[in-house]
Length: 448
Image (cartoon, rainbow, N blue to C red):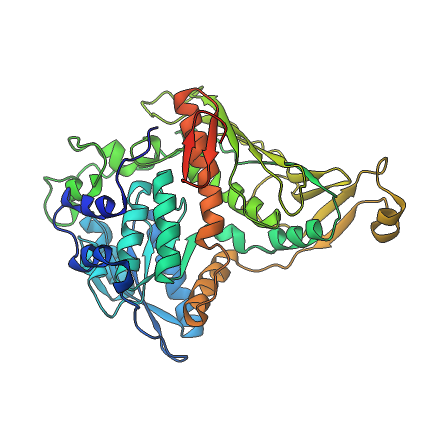
């Protein structure tokens, strides 16, 4: 997978592929110091939220915002947009709000304080950038973006604009990662050596083979209409393909498959546990399509190994191993190994599942007397608080908008997670080991 040669200005100008860009976005790029600061939100104001992309996931997230907003009188959904008219109609009716086929009408609205971006991956960065350029905060569904250059653009724009950007991997709001971070920082496992995790599923029909609406398409009328040209955006131009539209995660143009859809939910929590988000130094990936040979481009089985340099809890560096298959549902435990102990965050391996506790197992043969005095030599269970991680993640974003403090999953942490999974996709597609150049936000073929 080659990196996009577009720079920040060209990236936004790419909207010419789907029509004229929003003027405010182009003007903002002409002078980064003229970014729209957005509306000042008072303590009692309800935050005005709009959802861009209301397929299955976007509908769910918008509903979560509406639920939290109603319970706490904190926000309301004022607009939705999607290239599929049926989705617009359903969500417009559900939230009693405005609906659009063209997301740029939402970007242009001065009364919208924040947008939810839940479109296919290849649209994430572009829409988030335009929203921030127009003074809006962004709840950006995972994966954060589609290319490594977009990682750079999002990171720089958040820093420059001071906008709030929360990436929508709600599992990072679960308590176990933050308890694990504390345990590691306190020395319960010694120097970190290796983190491991998995994300496995199985089904008869094959992952991402979601239902197709046979009547829908660019030549259809009424609510069956799809704006296919808009949906493609900067991706390769093609005739309408219902499988690509309804099952986009099967194709490289719009997704990174397992890596970006599922491994983001593992890589992001790991970066929290480590005590400091880190970019990888070297990444390698393997896998294949072993069962679901249905024309998909992405593999149904995928694994990655990544190496990291020294960090706050790993003086000599550490490694990450992630495994996944969409044709077998047996997970491996999610854990972090240290020289003096092992911290198990998810015994049965489901990184989005709830757990009652995390466990630290000391390495009895090597721990010194000081360790034994403080922690003992038997496994230690650390209780984990129970709450709805989705509601918590949404509420955290809304609170961050008011306080202007960093959310649970800010752009810096998400960038580190995105870097390792996107570089893994490149390693798999190119059939070679890749090295990550953190200074320039790109992968290269030789050590940096």
